[in-house]
Length: 368
Ligand SMILES: *[C@@H]1O[C@H](CO)[C@@H](O)[C@H](O)[C@H]1NC(C)=O
Image 1 (tube, rainbow, N blue to C red):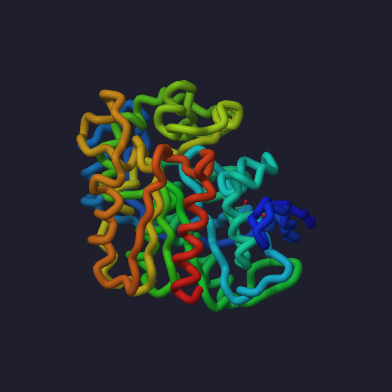
Image 2 (image 1 turned 45 degrees about the vertical axis):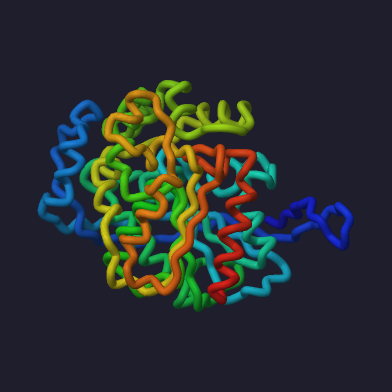
């Protein structure tokens, strides 16, 4: 599939459209995942989630879980492709799929991380995480956990470096940038704990170390069984005003927000339950880290444990974003940007391009 995306940019003092030629293909990557998951009660339901339960998960002993997983991913490469040895691997958050990174496939470049990255010369691999979208729907509590997700990311990095991704034109990548959003950033943090030598840079969006403060509100967004033939441990958001409060703030398209709600993306209880595993220090990691948040993020930037229950918005620039630096004491570079007047799902806001620009300037400065 070849598509041409036009972006309006300021060139030679005049506003003129620039067309980006890029080729995208959907690939299926078979992976034998093996991870140290946590033993969780199979009777877990959304009503058994409390901050106490979630905080205790890191103390539960690990158990080895192995499962074959087919990962569905959209690979896009620009032509020309000046940064031909660098790949961005994009890892979405809960209730989304790879389309989070491409404006929910609306074709509107304003909301497309991949179009922006491709314009800057990067190839992108946006995955449907295990248990989400068109990837294998594993057992939602025992298998769909943060460690298994991180193991999948590790396999993808190895395949990219080794030239074994099933691309129509096989390629080898020497530099890997892992970009997460929300639970995708949590997975990236955990991935760095286990495989500190995999990534040249992490871009953590919708992320801070104080997720625990936002958890009560996540439980208040009316999670209901996803059904559609899925295991009982798959849920979805059942309450649109809750979705809006959690994910949106400031200036955004209400029709995009509504379309987002109607998609009905799922959350597996195992991935939610183990989220705090990906909020820990990563002292062995020595690459670069960039944190990008919507400043009013209600999920990751609540200053008080009860803030989300009281309907308060977040304040990422009052400490939560900066707090990420302490998790990466040996990173060779650290920087952050809080996009003002913006909520948790940054890509869905009118301000999306501000963040894309900051991130890619940082990557460029890192020689990536
Ligand atoms: C992965 O896809 C292949 C080819 O379609 C299929 O044979 C296999 O059963 C799939 N594996 C899983 C775990 O779904």
